[in-house]
Image 1 (spheres, rainbow, N blue to C red):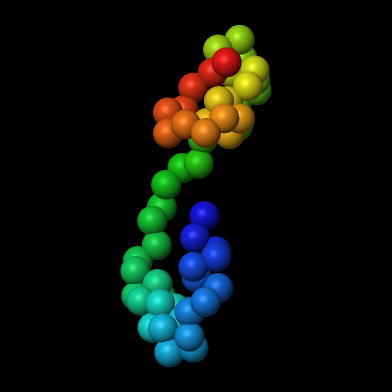
Image 2 (image 1 turned 180 degrees about the horizontal axis):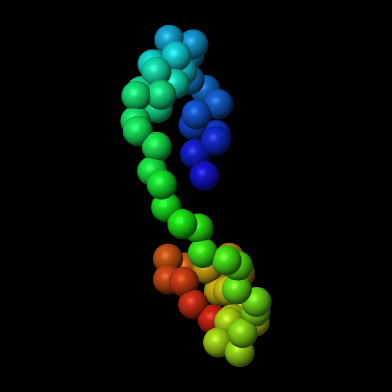
Length: 58
């Protein structure tokens, strides 16, 4: 997430970003329903457990 960078924007930049986002037309996509956990899911995601740039399962 970029919240730590975006929280330091000055007011002029923030207003410019809001103006830009208001110009973008909305996208109408169907959101798929949530899926229940399956056998193929990881028990532990190593990307968050140890320092690595590769996502994976343990």
